[in-house]
Image (cartoon, rainbow, N blue to C red):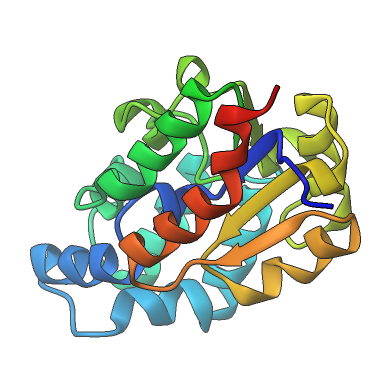
Length: 211
């Protein structure tokens, strides 16, 4: 028997938006940084890794992140997160798929490991804030980040749905197994937004004709 899904859970950076790596590369160029310097600060520098991890779970502020990452890179830390995400844009195909799902009566949630909300709210800046979804689940407000099973359960609770009723899309493969453990159907979004939306439409189209 086929299942009609009733919920769609979408990652923000790299799914609802254009690719994070392209954004980071554009940031490096705009700040006159060496290629790869920003990614090294985020993913390899111990202080950068620590402050980013703390920001995601609400144990550091965006301003803390601005100061630490700015210091590592040797650039002005003022409102750095805004500049760092300045080339991020909504991914039209994914946004349109989410709109179609909502129009069909499917509940749609955004689930994001947070970039912080003050002084710069990147979700609101891109028109992806509370009014755009049935639920918004941010790691800094939950105190845990993906891939913690808890945050996926919080998304289900917010939608008032069970795992097998939902589809989850993320661009990091390591974030999928904990969702699958709750019965959630997962899609690994890579670089082809059209392919992802085709998968989504195929899974969700039954909701539009559900009696």
